[in-house]
Image (cartoon, rainbow, N blue to C red):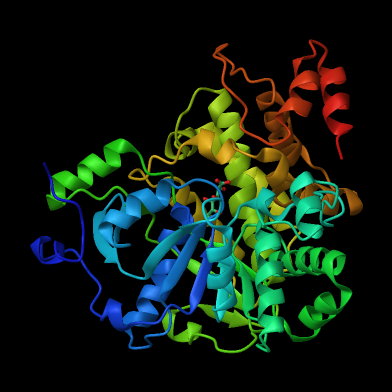
Length: 448
Ligand code: CS2
């Protein structure tokens, strides 16, 4: 049987595989991360690994999964080690990341996670759009959701806002200042939204707690960018063939990575700038450009491309018609932006086309198509609203939304059926089935 990746096995790795060059056992775990999916492992954890390697031993990560034990079960036998495989047409680079100390599974032991959070300097989050429990139309906390109702009544936390409130309450009781809560999800003004959710929930428990968090807490806005497709069994086997070790927790990503953070922290903070992170007073223009250009085109190409039978993003963008459509969409969306100083939109668009065409990632259109109801507002509808407000045309953007509408019926253009993976799928399926296109559009547009 092939040995697992582990601290003891590190020295048997091929010489060209980078590995942690710091003492993991001596490092402190100043970060707690909520939502240890592939994106965290390929993005923020790599920055913490860089900070540790640069000699600041405070920033190991105690990560948490709010739902399933899978990532813990993959990482625990490897003592938290996993391989980042960076791939593009030119080849691949392997690096073992050592920044993850352990994975806590919230449903197994909520109290342990609350204690871990209460001891953190910095809490980072990738809990996906739906993990904030916000109303997509108003951006307010969905206080009628059963999980939130239970948390407001002081029950055991189950949601990200619920865990943050429970941990902040403990810190206040203990006479400690709040930690910084840094959202790393693809939502506009993600930090403000997180702050609003936390304050609303805290206020339901104790208005004084909410005031204290509002006064002393910090919820910086951040923009994150790296294409990180889901790992497949074939990826794990290919890595094993190369390294002779089995790594069940590996992640694959493109070489590009970017993190822009609003410079607003409470208490101890890492020297993010030293690790290549951009700190700025206003993240919004970076975030808008990324959401409307990268993510907008991603969603548009994912729906239309998958309906046309293409399984991966590089296969979609390789079709001249889709590449031309992406340019038209970018023309429309780019006109709604106020690019931040230092962002050249023409170069950014060229780079995006190249990143989408990465032939080594196999980024599945189905993966990007997930949760469209939570993604479309910031990716496509925001550009549409801005253009309509200026009396401008929305042809390409409207086609993208039409692709999403068509997707809701769960059938591609060749008649193959699939399950629509979206929290609102039960509400979109009915209208999308209508044989009358005008009726289908009216039914879907009637959703907030
Ligand atoms: C993608 C994003 O799955 C999706 O919806 O659009 O995950 C995208 O790959 C990242 O935002 C890139 O930074």
